[in-house]
Image (tube, rainbow, N blue to C red; front, side):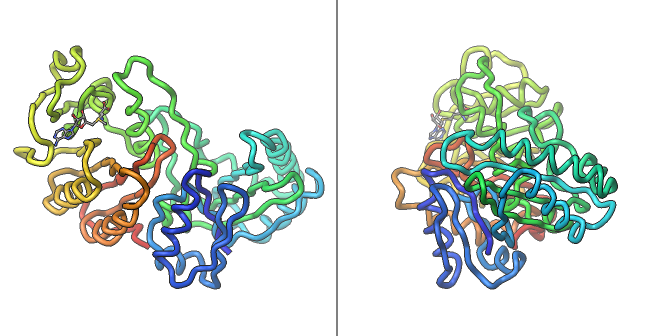
Length: 366
Ligand SMILES: C[S@@+](CC[C@H](N)C(=O)[O-])C[C@H]1O[C@@H](n2cnc3c(N)ncnc32)[C@H](O)[C@@H]1O
């Protein structure tokens, strides 16, 4: 059984998405934001068969019920399990998260379990404790900070508390977390915290910041971006703050200070007609358009290799058009080295596709 975590609002769309991707999948909801996929297939087989799932923020592969009668007993049996499963001396991450229905409920219990696990490891297997302490914490809220993607040597242990006494346990041994980019998030429950920047022109900045964090790659000083549908300018503001140059395209001007910024070149016109003179480092696109137009645009840019990296929003009206994302799942792997397709924490009725064109073929296509 594999578990997918979604948000309560998008769980029905995740169910539809998986039902489209897999032959008669056995899907069962657990609470308002967990979907159980009951399939005999291994995680690798399931991942390859279903492709990316835009409405899942995190997966718990090969999960099974794990009783939590008390904090001490749960910690003891978890450590016993890990001693028998994790490679000795390897690096690993531990996500212990609540899913009790009420925001933040159970967080304290999760912290106590974690402390008890560390204590047990200290007593019983110090080499495993060293492996746990060897990986960076995935709590960065600033994209220009640490890049918290999985390395090939890292395993992931997830314990999801669904009642105070019952959890699901998933242990994914290295190198599978690194191979599962786009399915398995280094952020616990796939929730990415982005700090608010009040100086940005709009709240749209959170979408770009979250995409960079999920990619483990930030726009850097000296790089060049094309920002399509750039006004009022949050997606231009962030790279410019870091010392990158931006060619911003919109029908309307950006905020005044950005229009005056020497690192910004503004083109007033149609985003769908703009072609850069030479390939750029980043395509950024948050244009308001029908989903098929934005999907066509990003596919054209990666096919023509006009950019090295891309972050593109696909916007929807209503809930009827989500199946159009399947075009990206089909076509992207032919043209890019890696990509992710996701309904971000910062997205409204949208999804984002982001990744790296590189030399291909796609390394995370399933
Ligand atoms: C959601 S806003 C972009 C917000 C922007 N990313 C930010 O961070 O401030 C969408 C923008 O797309 C622009 N737009 C829509 N259709 C366009 C087109 N065909 N060509 C250029 N701009 C377009 C709109 O003028 C609007 O400014």
